[in-house]
Image (tube, rainbow, N blue to C red; front, side, top):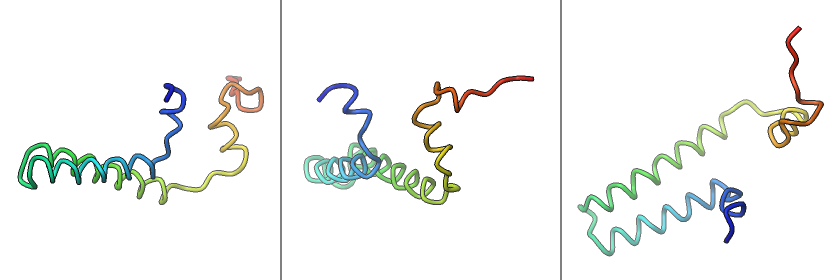
Length: 80
């Protein structure tokens, strides 16, 4: 997988990967291990970010476009 493809990974994909990593850490090191604790903390942080994104104010079509294309002429801001 190229670097560009890795950055396009959705938050849901990252949560699923973190869930699998936590499961593996629990099986390999035990549920009281530092490795498992770190994996669970990462999973919790991803879940929190998911919640923040859902509660964020929805963007209109121009805001979404400018988020994806900040250098587009429609999105440039000028000081007057």
